[in-house]
Length: 143
Image (cartoon, rainbow, N blue to C red; front, side):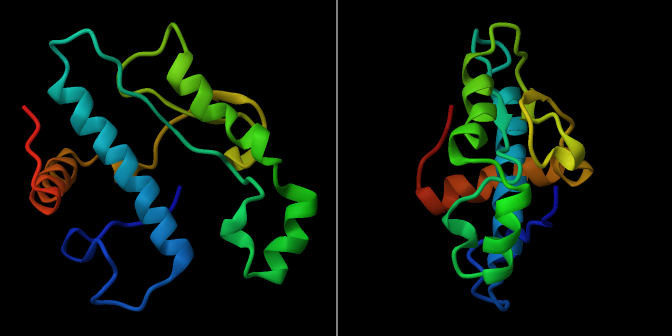
C-alpha cells in the first residue's frame, strides 16, 4: 500500500532506483491497469481483478539481512502468498475491479479477502494516462 507512480519515469532512468519504491510503483500500476481495463471491457462478460501477496518471503528480500531475519517472524511462505492471486482469478462472486489481499493486520499475512486499494490507485486520470503510455511503449492498441 505504498508507491507513487511517476508516469514520466516508469523505468526509473531519471531518478535513483530504489527497489522497494519501484515494487510499490508496480503494485499501484497493477491497480491502475485493473481499473482502466475493467472500464474498457465493462460491456463484455469479462471480470478484471487484482491481488497483492502481503508480506511473503520471496527473493525480493534476498539482499537484506534485516528482511531475511524479519521474514522468520512476519512473512508468509510463498505458497500462502500466492493465495490472493488464486482467489482473484477464481472467485465466482468477484466483480470487475475487485482487489484481494491477506486478511491480517496491515494486510501483511493471512487468508485472502476483498481489500481496499490505496487511495493513490483510485485516480482515473492517472489510470487512463498509464494505459495510453503502455500502449505507446508496447506499440499495441487495445480496442
